[in-house]
Length: 128
Image: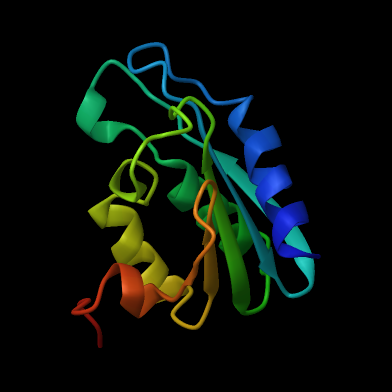
C-alpha cells in the first residue's frame, strides 16, 4: 500500500470518528503483518478518557494478533489546510504508544510532505 493510499484510508476512517465535544475528526490507518487496520477518535463525557485514533488503530492491530507495525498514517480531517504541523501530529500519549508498539514504523501525517520516524516525534521516549 502506498503512502497516499494509507493516508486516504486514515481520512476515510476519520469520517467515522465519534467526537461530539471537539468536533475534531481524526483517523489513523496502519499496516501490520501485511494487513490494514484503522481507528478513530472516540470522545466521551469524561474527556480524559477519550480514545485517540492512533491508539484505537494500534489496539485493533494488536487485538487481531497482527505482526510488526510498519507504517502508520494519521489524518485530522477538520484541520484547516494552512494549519501548522504541530496541529496535525499525534498527542504525547499516542507518541509513547507508537514508541512502545511500533518503534520502527514510518509515520505519515496528512498535510505534511515529510515522512517521520517515532524518534522524530518523540526523541526521548520511555523504553524498556
